Image 1 (spheres, rainbow, N blue to C red):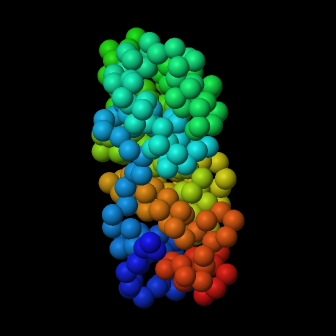
Image 2 (cartoon, rainbow, N blue to C red):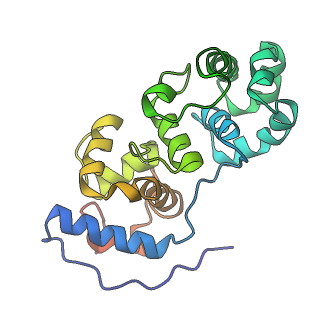
Image 3 (cartoon, rainbow, N blue to C red):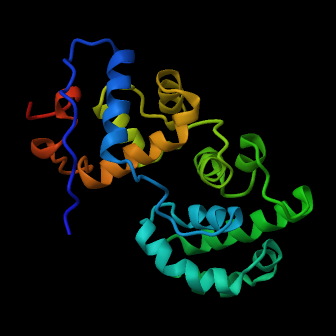
Length: 226
C-alpha cells in the first residue's frame, strides 16, 4: 500500500541561505515523516547493537527476518560470547558477510564482558572502539537505545540525501556528519537521520530518485523537476 503524504507548507526559494534552507527542510521532513523511527526490531540496547552490526550491507527487512531466531538463542551478552562461530554463522548467513559479522559479534560481546562488566557502554568513544562497531553503529545505539546524541548516523541514505539536498559537498561520512551537526539542533540529531533515511527509501533512491513526486524538490538543488 502506497503511503499517503500530507500537504506541506509552501516551499522556500533556492536563494535562501544554507542555514535557513536547512531549517525549512527540517520543518518539512518533520511533517512528512512524523512517525519516523529505527526500522530494526529490538527490545534492548544489546539487541539493537547486534542488529545494527548485521545491517551492514544488508536491508533492515532481511535483518528483521534473522534476528528473532538469534535473539531467542542469545538472550544476554554472555550467550553471544559463548556461541560457537559456526553456529552463529549459520543463523546470520543470509545477511551477507556472515563470517565477519559473526566474528565481530562474538568479539564485541567478549570485550563488553571484559571491559564493561557485561553492560553496553553509553559513550561514543567506548562504543565505537568495540570490534566491528565504529562510529555509525555507535551513533545508532546511543540515539535509539539511550536517547544520547553525540553525533549523527551517516549511512548511505543520509550521505546521499545530504549531498543531493546541498547540505554538504563531502563524501566521507565523518565530514558529512560534522556539516549536518552544524546545521541542526543537537536534540534532533537522532531523528534527523531517520527523516533522511525514510525519505531516501521512499522517494530519493540511489539509482532513480522520484523528483517528480518529491515533496522537497523545490528545496533541492539536485532536483530534475521543479
